[in-house]
Each structure stands twice: as C-alpha cells, then as structure tokens.
Length: 453
Image (cartoon, rainbow, N blue to C red; front, side, top):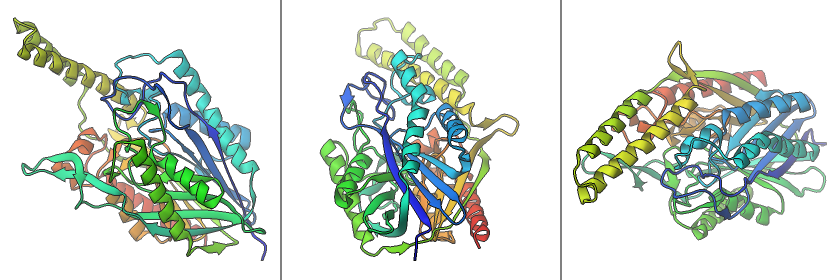
C-alpha cells in the first residue's frame, strides 16, 4: 500500500553572540562566556496527501518565546509560506542556559535595562532563523510511514518538598508525583524503511546545569537529541512536557547532563522496539483562547516601598562597615533586584492580561495525527495537569507540549495554592487556572476527534 504521508525534519543554528546575559537563574554573576554546545531551532513537518493538510512543529533551545518573536515568526510563515498559525506549534526546550533577550531579560540577574546592540541584532534575526528551519523541514519531505511508541525512565524528581514546619521548599521530593513516560514519534522512508527522524517528548526542567554555568547549552535535551541521532542515524527533536514542578534527579555538571540525555534516548529506543507503523495519518487541528484568573502578584509600588524602607534602615545605621551594616546593605541590594524583576514581570504581564476582566489570556492548540494527539501548554504547568490530560484524552498517545506558543509562567494545581512555595509565589495565574486548562484541552480533543470521523 502506498503511503499517504510525507515527513520532513531539519534544524538551523540560533546561538547568540557571547556576552549576552543568560536566562533562568537570578544568581548568575555575569553573561555568557562561551558556547558549550550550539543552540538550534529544530522543525519537523507532516503532510497528509489525501487532505492536503500540513502540521509543523518548531522547537527552539530557549527558556521561553518573547511575544514579539512569536508574532513576527507567525507573520513570516503566513506571508512567505502561506501557513496558518494554528497549523504551526512553536515550542522551546526551556533550557536555563540560553540567552535572556527582549522581555525575557527579566529572567537575567543583570540590573542593566538596555540590551546590547549585538543582542538586539540577534533578537531581530531570530524569527527568520526559525523560518529557515521550518522551510528546510518542508522542502526535505519524503513519502514516509510514521509510528508511535512509549517507554518509561526514572531520571526526574518532584521538586516541592514539605519541611517539618509546613513550608514548601524548592528541593527534591523523592515521594512526590512525577511522570516517567517517554513518548516517541518516528518517521521512516516509505520505500527503504530508513529512519527519517524522531521526536522525543518527556517532562523535566532542563536545569542539570546550575547558576555557576556561564556557557550556552541546551542542557540535557541537547545530549538526548545527540544520543538519539547517534542511535538512529537520523535527525531528532526533543520537546518538553508539563514539568513546572519536576527537576532532574541529578544536577551539577555537563557529565550529568550527558548521562541524563543518554538515559532518555536509551529509553526512547527501547520503546521503538514495539512501534507500529502507519501509512495514513489524518490531520486535524484546533486553536482556541483560554482565559484564567489573575493572581495577586506584587505591584511595582509595593516593592518600591519595600526598597524605601530598606534604604531608610541603612541610612539610620551609624557604622556601615560592621556586620549589621553589611546585612542592611544586602537587604537594599535584594530589594533592588526584586524591584528590577517585578518591573520586568509587569512588562511581560502587559502582553497577557485583559485589563477589563483582570484575566490572563493565552492560547491552546491541539492536533490529531492519525491515532495520536498533541496538546500545547503555554508555560510551566505542574506535572499533574499533563497527567490529567493524558489520562482522559480520547487519543493515544497524547503528547503534552509544554512551553509552546505564548508564555504565562507557572501554572500550579489547585491544591498547591494553600501550600505556597516558589512556583505559587511566582505565578501570574490564580487558583483553579490549571484545572481550566485541563477542561479546555479535553474539550478541544473531543472536538478534533469528532472532526476526523
């Protein structure tokens, strides 16, 4: 039987110049000093020859997508390639060792308000580099069969630990919930059966490398892709899942990042041993707006008052060189950093807040590809949210694509709000937002299921 599927995969380098501030940690001492491994925009495209419908996935080695980049890229894709934005899923791996750029500068430790000229030039060129990756993927399409597989791997840990005083710490919690499932999509040439490309989906924060790392790196996803490509002899792509409260089980070095990537790739390959191939994969897509409650995040004025109080206490101190003086100076410095971060966050909030309803506005995309489905989540969703969607989805497998489209930050589950902790304190969204996304995802999955019958 002839295949009705065409598949293409490609990548384009997006590594910025060194010297730019790094994103993901507030405690770094400086900008990027070098490149440990290159950053990429990777893309795959699947075309259904019967319906003449194309689905495209683009994944960048970045912490998040600046709204201006996403808007520009979508415009280019529509103008130059005639692609509808709802047919393109734009993700990031969420590496914490990529550049802080545009509105994402709020994730950097630097208090500098202005981006460098080199940083601005790189930012302006990023959408075109993403477009190049997508164009190359589409132009490389071959008649193909696609298959889906699953496996499990134990390389992550829940990072919300309840201490004896009832406080949630940002620390490993071996008894906490994780999602060990690795989902895999692979394509092979319809005639020769040579592997064309592989997609690996797994939920875990790319934070093996810590604050002391000042090199650009894709973290463990880079090594997972490299290992997958070595094992299969074909290009690969990693896409993250719902991992807002999930960290690597080991951290701290490039050797550890390589170990984790290789473990993930090995698990994915084990799953491929039971893969079932398809000559047809009907495509159905949907895009919808999601509005969720806004959280009580501190205003700029509240933090300014905190800084004023810290400065007043320091001014009253008569011997600034003693231990108490140093402590008060540290408090002022902390307040200055906080003010910088809150100002940057409010700059970001302007792009996602509906002032009339005081709601956070975002979008969700879903797609059906044969028996499988893809669900996008625009930020750092708790693992329980991804699990809820997968468990109730009418499609198997259901890939959860975290950090896709716009970025609204952390989205905890309802129970987390009474517990507190870093993710809740940092969240833009209010209690119940996560459950709204689950409900919307299942509604949209049912919709594309009915559409394809």
